[in-house]
Length: 398
Image (cartoon, rainbow, N blue to C red; front, side):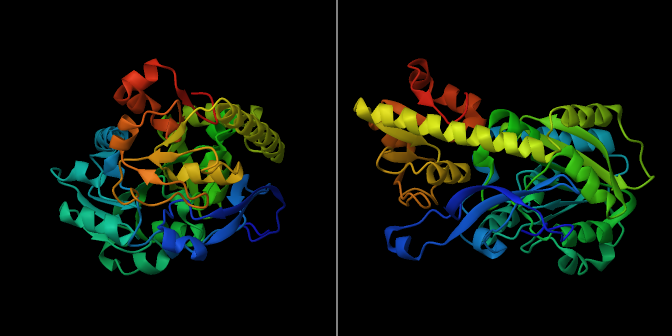
């Protein structure tokens, strides 16, 4: 296994087995041609980077049929409003041009529509990019990399903020992305991005964060070491609640910004918890195996007691859980979801039917596997009657 940044050999420490494309919800006639790859993870000790060994090609994951729209989540809409307000309040005086990497349907950038700032989105998935364009947001339907950023000659060294949210971990050629940031970012500019946090995944044993799109799981240490290689430095980090535990990273050019005390404190905590070490990875492996065994035992017990089980929310994360634990229609009757692009199709790999929410309400199960556990507050409130009956379960504590 080769580290995608240092290009040095690293040892894989865990395999989740054969895995399909996480967001590859499919029809029956596509079952025989379904794509699978080995979901294997490794750790680079040199830069403390947790990464996938193999993954599908980016265009297999992000294309005209991409089924995730940020605006479909009330929680994410609210988060992006808070995120954009934070940027305006903290950096508004220096801000003229702002670019978002992985802008999806424009939910984040729409918060800047009535401001003086010039905004631009990069979104490789055609269908969601079209939604963004219809909202009046300038969007380039391409991957953000050095080749494509060089086309923006007027913006060279003239972008004050480049932002992203749950997008940088999706990019296999991170070197090209960073070089693209370097090409566009002004001298005192900032690269601000949020990503699922490795420390939260270790703590919760939320191994469902590991799937094809999440090529990297970042820690503070890894971000610090990676950007140091490219004449940038990490100057601040702010923990976030999104995606079950994320981190907002603030990166600038070396010697241009003062580092915060908060960053030093968080880095120290990380070292104490072995989040930046191979030892932490081996401990996580044991926890994953224990979690799998407990979950399989639980669903088997439900079936022995003739309980009807449904899945709630056809998430990309559910693909890892279901395929790693070999949980299919032998245990779960259906998965309900609100996304029209998924309804009427089947889950990747295990081929569980995806139905609409009305079906869930008319066919109330005895137990529901909450795959979208990171949106539990919103869902528990929405399904108050079901919640009061204590019928939810998940592979982690909820």
